[in-house]
Image (cartoon, rainbow, N blue to C red; front, side, top):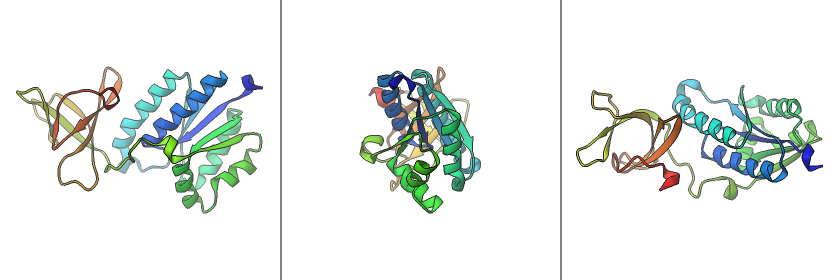
Length: 215
């Protein structure tokens, strides 16, 4: 039976999406079955273009790493159950994975439990809701929307965060500022060698270009 399983991971933008992909990939690897990743895009392009520009390359990188197929669907939030149902049927999904936080958000948007709707609309698939504690980063994603920013290398080898590009600019990327801070503390995301790096920013300074996951 296991060789007939087909995993569909349903995500939206943000750090939880990365964790859910890895969770689904571990199941697909264990069962040696196909992995499909549905990115439900209901976010405003104007307001969230920076967030998307960071998340999408990461999602694609993970899909390539785990031999998964990335599926992006643009729709309105109230159509989420229809999008998941159609995608699940199109890929013959036998296992559908969503995050607990995502379920709570989507439940609020659709006015009813997305779990109940999917169980009825896709009876041939098992539905898994991954608890928040197993899907999220150790800390919640407490950042403001991303804004275009730049890094300028200083004489001491560190990099200063700037919001104006000039001749001395070394890196262009997206800055995500921590909520509830008076300083430029947060994460700077940049693309280098076709990979997204996320580096720490403390009081407007990046000490070194090292991905957070590799510290």
